[in-house]
Length: 288
Image (cartoon, rainbow, N blue to C red; front, side, top):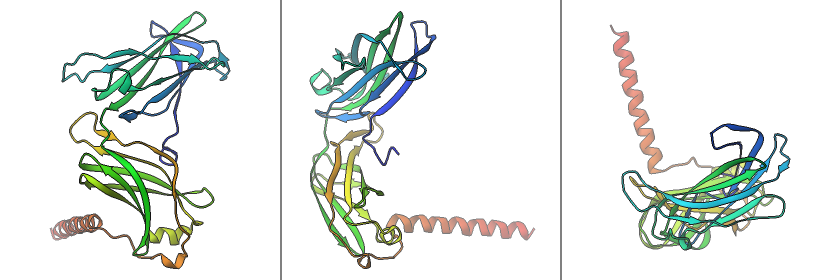
């Protein structure tokens, strides 16, 4: 489900613990968090509400809310701390928004922890949220084109790549009736400049599932992988919703050929070697 609807908010409900670390009976904090990873000028929203064991709303007041950097223990840095404004939406649920680039974190990369101190009746507790922020945006989207090539449908998602490296891009495809059809992914090294990420709808899959055309490309996300470092990625801006609708294609234009790639051939060759080694070992054992 998290891949079908990747931009759905993160919803949690936890029993409130007081200042002594004891769980408070009949009192739960229901929270939402819009996202975990963000970069550049992006922001993230949060909500906090109190409910009883049956999910009914309870009175809640917010005493304080602040966000601070969580230092990497290997690298001593000055801790950044800033207040975050929350407001009651009228139903007893409080909502707030953090924009790291304008709230003191514009030169910081790492975990930002938001602590929200709340009270319900005589009980007090804290709601905690973590986000992972990178101030740099490695690439920006510039458009989409499609092409039916070698019996498969390719979506080429265009981008202006500022920082070269390995990019991981994911997108979802629904059919004309809104039924989820495929998860498409790109994972490869990309040079700086005007580039295209190829996302392929394999022909054999189309022939097997027979989706209703046109297909709709939606909910695209991507990031630059940063090995041996934390954060291990710098994210591109999300592209929520449908960003491209394909042309209509007859099924006979798609190929039934099996998937083939250099990686697949390499894996099959390794599996073949393993099988031969195992067979020789069995022959040696049976000969004793």
